[in-house]
Image (cartoon, rainbow, N blue to C red; front, side):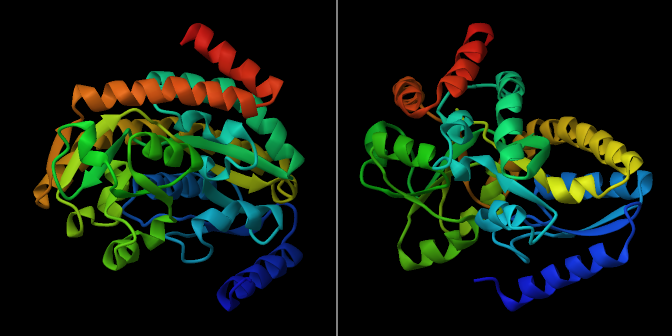
Length: 324
């Protein structure tokens, strides 16, 4: 059910489309992260450039204030909003391609993650077009790590811990590492800690800051391993309603936002880890036993991924692996 607030926003969008010509538009945008998150900062810079180079004005509603993160793609498909930011790994049940970047060490560096993104692009373009959507740009998350209440010295330290993860791929990885892994939306993490539903996290330094992980955990063990992606997505219908000049301006702003977002992700990781330690956490790199096991899990998960993926998706993976 759509809440009253969302219904009101949708009605406003409809009124806007009715009132404006094809040469001007006001759009409402949904995202799931707070203003402190670099993804949100990048979105705002994208919006500023669109506004300065076109007749399009985009009003951002961050931090799940309009639509919950996991429901944004559905809202786009239903025409409830014209533009939004999604996390691709959430949709692994729709197509295995969504979780490919979430397999441990499929891409162990930003350079490899960028290369994988480029190989995936035509595949995603096709399936999103079939859903009436268009990806404007991709943005990478920093490498991931484990937030725990006790130090991580060996794999045995994971056994039986209740771990919050964010996708089917990371759930499988967590279980193979010995955790009891549960998928939970970002906004539910603090309450899940308070009720005892979870006692550890696997996520980025950025997310740890967003939820003030130091309130519930004491140690951050950085593993890198996964550079998952977000995407800013627009309704094809809304995009087509823009003038040719405005479409070109949006695409140009998106091109700049993609590069800037990846740079912001890489540049802020060390700063973010410092923020964790400033707030009392102990940050270390994962011990070799953990990273070696994660690499083994990654290879095992690729085999499973191939069984579920289409021939077209497998071809994407094989082309990427051939040049990685």
